[in-house]
Length: 315
Image: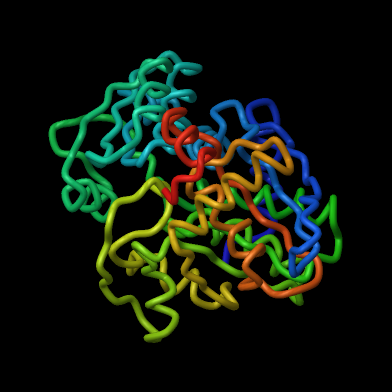
């Protein structure tokens, strides 16, 4: 669990970089819950990663940052690191999986980041080992860096300030850094609120780990839900995440696509695949009843893919 004091300190540290995003009601008459959207797609890079990346980088010394910044990301963390590197005037090198969407790759390029495409397993190994062979610089881990998680936890502080009594908070799960940060803040301030994670069925590693009681490998298939899901929960994250999560649900890709359409039609919100997972969980009833907060983690979706989904494609 990330200490509340660290999350509060992170909020002060990132105040000039991250937006305090709104919490808005999603009005769907047939919904099984009172659904609220935490709109992290409105951050400067259209993703929550602004928070954690900025906090982790600002906690490092100037000497550590001088050679540049390095990370591994499907896209959103990459943009967070590239954005911070541009502000600092240092280079950024990003390892991405081969299936990373062009919208995210283009955004990295606009921010001045250098992209290195890797096969999925090689990319995941960079995350496991915290190093990209042949590249110097400060490696900013996309998941398990304590500063990263503390920065992410500021979302939890804002949720409870805007809605003091949520019955559940639903968080998309990729590597676990977003869940660990938000859940730590919620547990410290309102422990009776349920923490629910949402993953695509095509890579529901946390759901499998919760069912087994330990990390297990699952079949992983790439989909438009590129910012969440994995082959296996990071062993280093499992002891931190397991006590914080009340329920881990797997969402069919088609339901994620339907949630993208619902957010666009009912709230005029653009969500990427991972950003639609939590609303999909709430709309399906998997997150329970009462007041349910859904973290819309990002909005970086290829416009061509968005058009397909809005026209009825199942992802």
